[in-house]
Every structure is written in C-alpha cells, then in structure tokens.
Image (cartoon, rainbow, N blue to C red; front, side):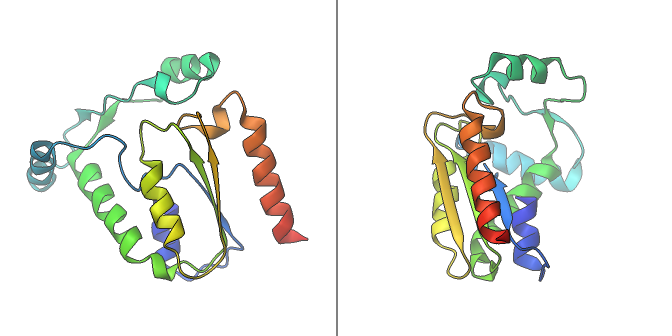
Length: 167
C-alpha cells in the first residue's frame, strides 16, 4: 500500500515495481461499529493498541514459516486506530489515483489470501489505464507468496519480469 501510494503521488525514477499482496482492502469486512470506533479513537486516542487478530497459519502453508513467525519476538499483534484510519484513507486514494501509475508494475496475488482482498487488487490492477501492468495469481497460496511451499514459481515469475525489462 505504501509503495502504491508513493507511485501515485510522485514522479519516480523507478523502472518498475513489484507489488505483492498489497493491503488495498481487507479480506474480511470490518463491522461498521469498529470503523466508527476507530475514527473516534483516531482523533482522541490515536496510539491505543488493539489486537489485530491475524492468525499466523493464514500467512503460509509452510509450517516452518508459520512457526518462525509465531516465535519471532519482533512480530506484534497490534494495530492502532490511527494506523487503521490512515490505511483506510490510503486505500481509497490508491483507487482514486490509479490513472497516475505510469511505471511498469508486476502484481503478485495469492489466490487464497484471507488477510487482504486479492479481488480488489485485481480491480485496481485492471483499472490502471496507462503503463504496463502484469498480474500473476497463485491459486491456493496464502498471503505471503514468497514464503509458500511453491515459492519457486513466484521467484521464477519475478526473475522473468525483471529480465524482460533489463534486456
């Protein structure tokens, strides 16, 4: 999401971007009351942490990756109201400003992402009017396609996309 926002706002010297499972929409709908509470708290108590309830088993089918994530002391399970409201605002801006993307983009999308909504990312990618957009979808893969069991497929697609641009 940050990379997409950056590309939409600034003229970059990039020769392309590889966007993997971006948070342009949350997979599960967020209840209206939670959105309302987040908006209120974003103004009054912006840094109060709330549990994000991300299940590590939904990141990858590779049990070693899941175990490493769960054991990593730097991983936290919190989100603040300000982060939620700012991310929500950024998601809307990415769609509103899709006409500003002019660098080549490779979208790598998991087919079974339960954290972010890959269908919304497809809508975004297909709606970019200018520039070169390549979309690769990986059926059955969870959110972290670079950490899935079949990650060699993803690595190959990245290598091929880069090679086509530097040759």
